[in-house]
Length: 95
Image 1 (cartoon, helix red, strand yellow):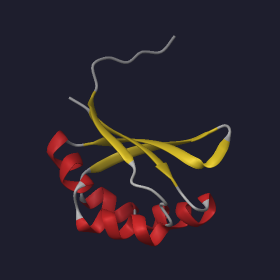
Image 2 (cartoon, one colour; image 1 turned 45 degrees about the vertical axis):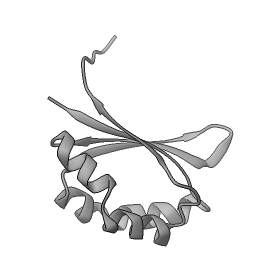
Image 3 (cartoon, one colour; image 1 turned 90 degrees about the vertical axis):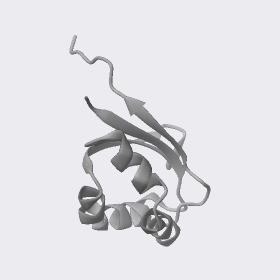
Image 4 (cartoon, one colour; image 1 turned 60 degrees about the vertical axis):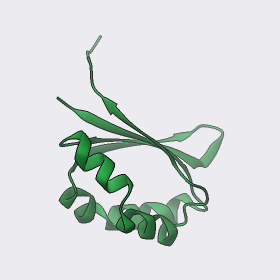
């Protein structure tokens, strides 16, 4: 069963944030992240939506509440508390 973490976040500068995000790949992987997709709102390049797949719900929730994540968010230029939701995949398909 797949678990997804949906995160809406605002950053000061996308390019700076992305460098920090890419640099945290091993940290995220070690905590249970499998993959991610990154989107931005068409009207604001610094308003992002990230979907990431996790091994299990517990790993995703533990990482959400970790000091490591808080420190990474501050360092990378996240400007407000992200809106985070853990989702359980029910179905998917290709048309």
